[in-house]
Image (tube, rainbow, N blue to C red; front, side, top):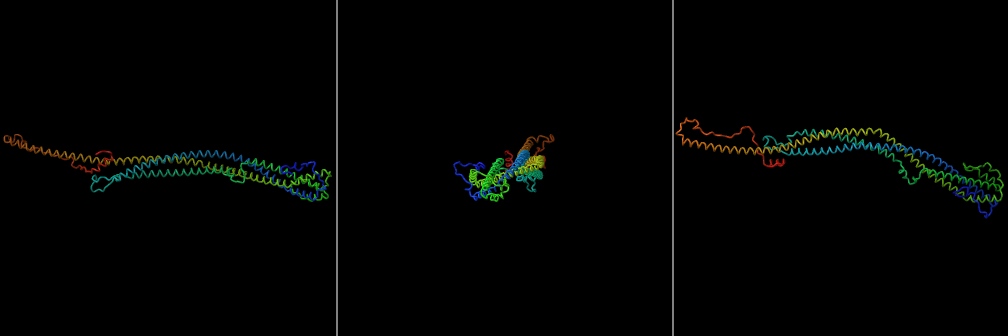
Length: 485
């Protein structure tokens, strides 16, 4: 009896020159032993029934897998298209956020630069002490900053900080919204990839590159081979029964042995107590030859049926595992679809949040730009004030120089006038000495008058004196303004 072919090996003919067997030469006990062994081998029918169950179950799994695979592919394609659309929307919102962030950062840099310039100017005002000689002696010393209204700067700064805080708040709200959007997209992507073939193939017990269809064909082939092998065992059992019945008293023995044949074996036991048909010696010998030959293969055939069932169980487990994987992929894909629907419901809020940020930023940007313009104006004013003070120092120095020159000129003029007056007195006295005795006093009333005397006096006597500034102070002012002494 062969383990790969059923009927041919059980009926293979022996060569004609082999020694002939006589039924009488075969002890009844040997034949009954063969019959019992054959009967035990028939218990393999349970394996065949199990094989049929596996094929039926596998076919049902295959049909379900085909349906689930089609549904999964359809839903997955739709979800992937939706994810692409959602990603494009997310990218659009990100563009709005990045543009706003870029502009905001640039505005902040410009604002920081303007604030730094203004602070430097104000620090210069603070460190520049007004020359005491320009102020009343009883006044305390003051810096240029004391003449500036800092409340204007503080007011602008408060407004700018408020706008910056509002922009930061709007930016954070948008960032949180985008983060939630990203989390939603990531959840969908994870659901699409969860339970994929890569995850299933993490088990080392199976080779997942084998398609379910190929495994199904292998199961069907195993089941057919097992059925053929069982059929050969049944024929061998029938042959054993026939052989035993042809022995003396064999009918009773055959009836006793076949009384509890395993359930499910298809054979006719109704005529087990009917006497066997007569056989020629040659037929009996040929039957014994076949029986002895097949008896040696019974155990191997039963083992092959068992081994094939073990292989089928492994393959069915493989199919079940892959089918469960497909079912899980379908469930995950469906979950991804449901997530996509939920994200779609929140999509309007994500887009609206981007629009709200854009509107808020445009409003605050205008406020910040106006504040920056005010900063620039104040900075220019304070710088102008600082330069004007340097100009004042230079102007005071110039006026003092002019005053000194005028005083010198006045003093020189006074000296010359006094000299002219003295000369005039002397000339008049000389004329009076030379000619006076000859001239009557009433000939010209002014003959004896003294010469007119002149004085140079300030026109406006209440004009303040120009203070004398230290030369170093004037030189510093000239240096800051780029002038020369």
